[in-house]
Amino acid sequence: MRVTVLPNKLDVGEAAARHAARSLQHVLGRSEAVRIIAATGASQLDFLEALTSTPGIDWQRVEMFHLDEYIGIPAEHPASFRKYLMERFIQKTGIRKYHLLDGEQDPADVIRLIGRELNSAPVDIAFVGIGENGHLAFNDPPADFETDEPYLIVELDEACRWQQVREGWFGAIPEVPLRAISMSVKQILKSNEIIAVVPGARKARAAKACLEGEISPLAPASILRTHSNVTTYLDMDSASLLTESTIRSA
Image (cartoon, rainbow, N blue to C red; front, side, top):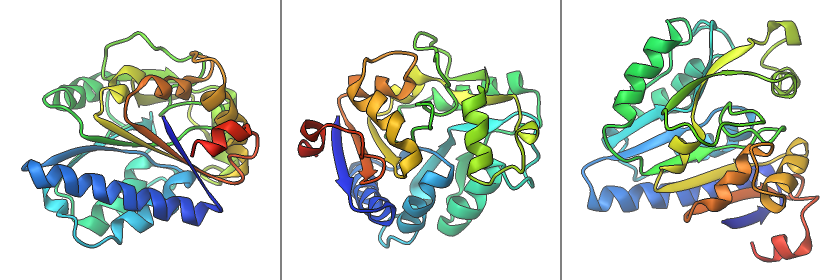
């Protein structure tokens, strides 16, 4: 895993966006289309703003898959990841081929249909974040590292739900759904390249556990270290607990 530490979260977003744009253009230079996985959440805001403002990307040739979504939340809800992606990514770029997880429909049907589309061809690039509890997508600890299913129905733990409140997506923890649809860990690892964007002081403990601790379901994003082509972007706040050797390797 390559670790890059920048001074602040804006620099993280811009650097990760430059990297993502290069990767997208590289794939588009040799293929008719590029398939990506898009993450959401507060940590991705600067990254997506910079990426969608980058000229020279033929978004009409991009196919996008959704990483996770709450079960039972309408698309109009402020915390809906469908709403997030439509407003901050799809409408800004004009992507025409995208697969959003509808949390209002029968989740078993949703994961079967979109999972089939996802498995129809390899994914070129996955954009991900790391949660305050170390989760990868909505795979909270202890995460399932074994399932081959592309999507899972998962129970959200209390730490994950509190994160959503602290970030302002919900007013109080009783409002946060208990269940979600999440792309599985193994499915994320099938991506040819993974770019992880992890700014902010609240991510420091998770960054320490996932980048320097044991690779374990108790620190779900630690599994990224087993992939051959991952770059993680941190700011000084999220990197504050890392050892000098990890930061020097950036």
